[in-house]
Image 1 (cartoon, rainbow, N blue to C red):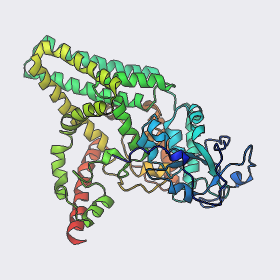
Image 2 (image 1 turned 180 degrees about the horizontal axis):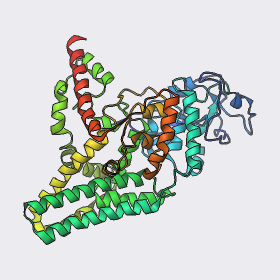
Image 3 (image 1 turned 90 degrees about the horizontal axis):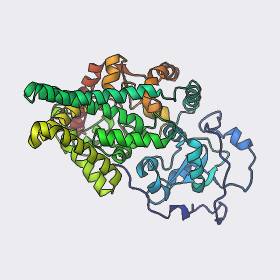
Image 4 (image 1 turned 45 degrees about the vertical axis):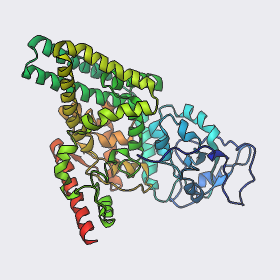
Amino acid sequence: MGMRAARPGGLRRRAENPARASKPSRSPRVPNSRLTAPAGPSAMAPDPVAAETPAQGPTPRYFTWDEVAQRSGYKERWLVIDRKVYNISEFTRRHPGGSRVISHYAGQDATDPFVAFHINKDLVKKYMNSLLIGELSPEQPSFEPTKNKELTDEFRELRATVERMGLMKANHVFFLLCLLHILLLDGAAWLTLWVFGTSFLPLLLCAVLLSAVQAQAGWLQHDFGHLSVFSTSKWNHLLHHFVIGHLKGAPASWWNHLHFQHHAKPNCFRKDPDINMHPFFFALGKILSVELGKQKKKYMPYNHQHKYFFLIGPPALLPLYFQWYIFYFVIQRKKWVDLAWMLTFYARLFLTYVPLLGLKGCLGLFFMVRFLESNWFVWVTQMNHIPMHIDHDRNMDWVSTQLQATCNVHKSAFNDWFSGHLNFQIEHHLFPTMPRHNYHKVAPLVQSLCAKHGIEYKSKPLLSAFADIVHSLKESGQLWLDAYLHQ
């Protein structure tokens, strides 16, 4: 599931470089820089703006990228934002977004994910001041040589343009209508049984309507979870609890814990929990599958995984795993507020359907809904990622990291509704706090950026995207078998 949170004490440790300044009683503060890192002539060249900027106040401590990269383990973790170096060793446990998502950038530049995930960056930076231990040396580039400098600079210009265009601002009427249509479907499901009785056909129609409620509530809680509806975190969090807790019966903290990691490092093994089914259930991606075969590891008959996917994938994920794991999660982590919200869902379910169906009938309906919802959820969420590049973390720039792991599905009224606008997965991953009704507006700008830098921008028909999941599983299973037998 990722790395554990760091143990306390990291802020008191020092680098072993004798050339550095002696330990001060408190780390000197350095004035905050702009959100966009200063540009230099190349990724490896000294940064001229940083080199020409005179120091203000106490002389800051300077670090190299090699020194930062060494602090990526369990005991000591540093990261860089806007050339400022932060020691997050003790902070990871207190990080509101979860300990693992911030730890995945330990030893790396985290400027772009910091900008992408936070809607009130000035407020967040006030809390970060206590973590500041220095900055990059003036001769150091603004980010690592593994990252495309020109692409990064142009993407930051694109983001500034997007913000000026108002594309990060939500249309509250849109999200109100999303909520109302969910509530109407929920009411229609109950009325179906109340009016037409509890025979097979009305029961089936009720289950289909309730599965639509659950799927659409899943997309709506995703909006609130990403802070893309309101301008303040408080209201987003409150509505997130309501939708995911009361309308779906799941904990907000569990979703946050998993989903932000996925966005931080999509399709990166041991950093993206969405691919944790590798290697115990599936062999995913060309690189990891060959690696697994060479290691002579066989937890499942992966060469048949494109067949058993239909048994343990879409039908089983929610009713046989998520449904039980969420209760373990909230109890083990003592998330009592989440548990209270979840219980309101089950109370409403039993109060409305037990009088019509009895206890056994209500439970049967519930698991029928979970089965239908699971198929809907898995096909939609995996079509954008499983067929794409899957590998270990190579510390690439933000745009390259997101584009190699995501693809789109063509826009249509049905596709937009069916997937909660996650058919625009590329735009969503580049701008995770952008309201989903604006994805189609920013898409042409993203396509132009990709074309300029020779990055493939993939978009497919819906059914082709579904089929590609199976094709990619078949291909990676065969690659595993060849490596297992012959390498």
